[in-house]
Amino acid sequence: MNDWVCFKIVRCECDTINDNLNSSVSMMCEEDIDDVLDKNTFFANIFAIMNKIYNCDLCDDEMSKSVVATTGDGGNNSGASSPPLSNKKTPKRYLHNYGRYSSIYQHPLALWAEKWWRRAISITMIALVFVVLTALFPVLAVAALIADIVLYKKRNGFNYVRVLAFFETYLVIEFIAIISCLIIYILYMISLVVAGGDRDRSRWDRWNFWYQSWWGGVMLFGWSMRAMGLSVQIEIKGGEEDFIAPWSDANIRERVAKAIGINPKIMFLRHASFADTLVPQGILSHFFHLRYIVKQELLWDPGLDISGSRTPNFFLFRDAGAEGMDIEMEAIKNLVRDFKPKVIIVEASCIDLYGNEVTCIWPEGTRFSKSKREKVLESLKKKDDPKYEFASKLKHTLLPRVGGALALLESNTCGDVYEDIPKTRQERIDWILKNWVDIDTWVEQQQQLEKSESKKKFN
Image (cartoon, rainbow, N blue to C red; front, side):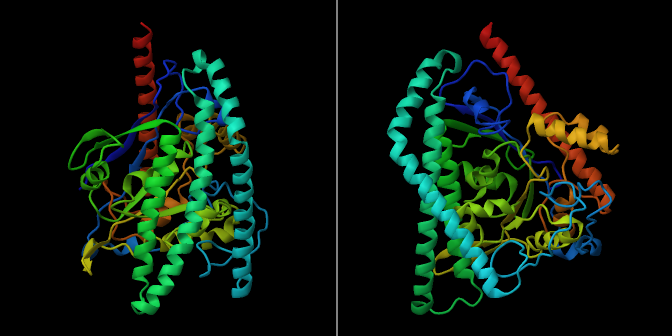
């Protein structure tokens, strides 16, 4: 299993194909929503599964050491999603059992109040937006339809209508998440009385992972794709089976799981759009238990807050500073310390998989856009940073912040990766950067391919 596996979304297209294929956009990416409205064809993102299979009895001691430098590399190694560290003094933060994030509070009552105050505000805001948008939906739909008809020759699609439908669908999905989580909690409390205790919380975990697969994979990904009128194709190379197939195929998730193998994995994903945060759920959640490392600001999304707090995820505080980032890195390491070989457990005629965990991280730390790329390059150039030359060669990705990626690799001794991982820290940094160049090159190749196909159509 030392072959590279490139797991790509080959193409993501609207139902109505636009001949003007002059941009590499993926769903709702680039500068703003107007960019999406101007295009009907969306260039998909690559996300590669990059990890290594380690047999537990062959694990090297060095692999289990928790050695992550938080300074000394221009700040870009400080965390998976953290921006360059500043000298600004930040309050000390602590890990706790009241959520999957760090907090400045330690007292249980303060932590409880912090969580439910946030949820009270976020749920109320979502409810207000939903009521207003639903009430205005008929008027907005007519206005969007008129705008699409007027601009149809230019855009060759009903883009405004699709975007409006997407936002309404997303709000509905949010409420389904909140209600579903409440129902699961009530049923779980009843099960403790009727079926007995759940000392290891395996029942709780099993129910919530099943819900995560249904809500994230079927609804959040599936419904969003349909609302935007997108068709997704998946390409697998380097696995047991090479193929290109549409996501709509009935057995696509089973084929993907078989091709890449059901084992613990770490995924380093390119972050170019809202869509690439949903793709792992849509493709992998049926056969894998997904763990996310995302920015703490997403706690203000009540669906993600409640759902994400029930399974092993971590909401990273990106402004933790040099000292506080140690706490964030410790939480990231904990996400893979329990990785173990695959075990199938049969309980009450129900087959459950263990050792099928996938931890997802976005090393760039933020969505790629041309303006963000220019800002990164400008910052590196002003500081006379030696990484400027490397970053300037990346045309479609941002310079990865490798701190979080290193933390995962150094803490995970029994993971699943399709490439040999170097053992020293600097070699691992070089390895990550090399693979990032490969991703950037792949995106460039896809752009050229799209332009070539576009010219053929015009000719």
